Length: 336
Ligand code: SF4
View (cartoon, rainbow, N blue to C red):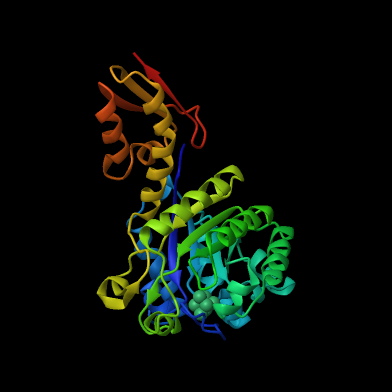
C-alpha cells in the first residue's frame, strides 16, 4: 500500500551555533523560540500523531533548526531516546537531523547510526569559499566535502541544503554549487533564496546599500537553472523557499524573494518553456491532451493554471491527464 510520507518537525533553535551567519535569526525563521525539553519531544510527536492516520503513513521525526551534532552528546542521546519507543512500536520509522558540516565526526555518526537516525542534512549553503566567508558561515567547502563523504560512508541518506543570492553569489556560482551537491551524491536537497531578516547583520548591509537582495524574477530565473541539475542527478528537492512562519509574516521580513508558492512558480516557468515548442509547432484548431506524471501534474498545469490558460488561448480545448508510466518531466501530447 502507498504510504504518505510525514515528517514530524522538532525545532532545536541555535543551541550550538558558535557563529552567527549573517543572514540568520533562527528563532524567527523556524518560528520556535525556546529549546525543547526532552519531554517536549514526546508531546510534539503525540500531538502530530493525533492528526495522522498512522497505518497509512511513513513517519519520520526531524530535528531541525540548529546544529544537532553540536549540542552535548548527553542531550543528543536524550532527544533520540525519547523517539525510540515510537520506533520500537513501529509507529515512527526513522529520524532525520540537520547540522553544520564542521560538526561531523566518526564518533558522533556512530551515535546517530545506533540511535535510529537515517538521514543527515547539512547546511552547505554554497560550495564557493568566497561566498561562505562573506556569509560568515565559519566552515569551508572542504568541510562540506569531507562531512558528506563520511556521512555516505556510514550509510546515511545525505541532504545538502543550499542558498542562492548570498553576498558574493551569482547564478554561475549557484549552478556550480548544485552540480557539486549532485557530485557528492546527496540524496536530497532544499534550496533557500536569501531573505533579509530583521535584526541580522545582512539587514545592516542591506540598509547601507552594501547588499542587494534578489528580486523574485531573478530568483526564479536562477532556480529554473538549478532544478534541472537536481532532477537530472535524481537529487530529490524537498523544499524551495522558506516556510511562511508567523514571525516572517509579522514584520521580520525586510527584503528578498519570499513567496509561499515559490516552487510552483518556478516549476510553472520550466513547463511553460516546454509548452512553447508545442504552441509554435501545432495547429491551433486542435484539441490538445497533455500527458504528464502524477507528481508533475499540478506543476505542468501551472500556478493558478497559468500554463493551461496559455494553452487554451491557442488550442480549441486543453486537457491534462496523468500517465503513471512517465518519469520526472517526461510528457507527450495528443492532438486531434
Ligand atoms: S549555522 Fe545555521 S542556525 Fe547557526 S547561525 Fe548559521 S544558519 Fe543560523
